[in-house]
Length: 304
Image (cartoon, rainbow, N blue to C red):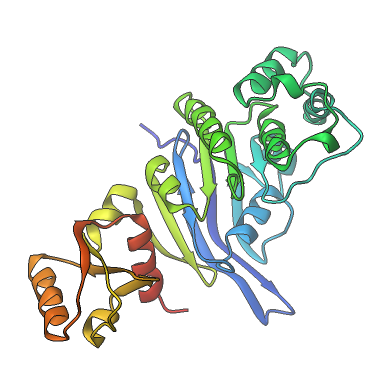
């Protein structure tokens, strides 16, 4: 059977500024399949937002091609844009309309008529039903972000892009958003998520790409990333200075130290080094590494 058309396809995408002196994207290539929940991770300045801007038609790639459901974002921009729903980082809204009016206008932008039943479902699912007739400027920041999500989904796009959707929002909104988006994903919508909350990516994403300095430095299934890197993490508290061989593998937050170890022998070597250095440790735990541990290990190992 022929392979399905990718929901999103990035093909050797490059983006430069200042006459080529600044390279924001350096040959990015990967596909996202229909119905896939895909994470795009990276530190600030890695190129994630630039890549999404190219995908959404807000910036044009210097080289390469980007397609949404087979539609080129430049040559067939109208079809590509209609297949895409983007939730941006910034709170952008029109202060002169109510929530329902905003969603009706967005529906009209995409040529969708008689859309009130779906608008009602969005309002209910995102906890906005009691705000339907409120003016946008009267809403809290969290409520405005819910409206941005509803705007992105109002034309029922097969591809959903969430660019830091839960940055600075409360726990209730996060849970509401992920329940609704997960439901849409199970119904066949492809989801591309960027987030700095790596526990969200670990819980939601089937595959993950990691970016640094405009390049993809890791791309695999989430389970493979977790099992293929540091499998064990030592966590403990100490006031003592760590010996150099331990400090090189450690992440320190106040008194809390986390040290990677790839096998049982490395766990024993680490504890022996701490004892030899006279480090007094408290609350020692040995557990599996999570996605944040893997992310930091990959970023430290990737050349800029």
